[in-house]
Image (cartoon, rainbow, N blue to C red; front, side):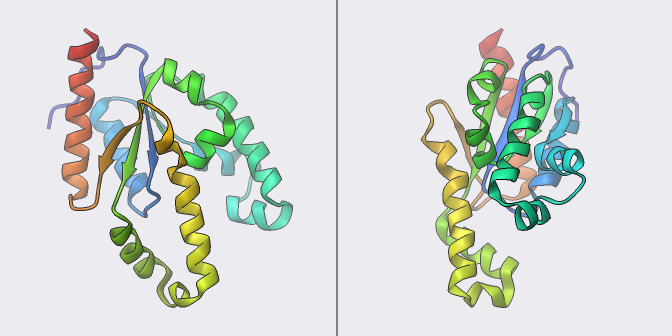
Length: 183
């Protein structure tokens, strides 16, 4: 498949957020490659900045430390141009970076039906899915993640019934369509 014209959207970034699922990093890498954008993975940047995994930081130092790291990293992320920025919706909202990122990018939120998410959670959590506390934590994470959907002008792509390849094609087509609208 042809790559996107590097002149498209000059300095515009694509911010990818939404439903947390195992394939999202791969989807982000492929989209960045297809669109000719640099990939900025905020979770990876936070872990590289801290020298530890986010789950270990949360366990050792608490949620406040994680939020502080998110804000520090997001202060740098907003400086990127012509990038595909993969970021959790909760990180995006908590950091206060949405207005700056909107000025220089388009926020795309991946969504899925609740039934589909529950099936995927069951597969991901395995036996832990039957623990009400584990399931409640996972659903709480989803609820926080999807608060981004309440903001105006968030572009949503429903991944419930489509393959990864179709999703990527739809986002690429959307991105190319932006160049026509923005001229």
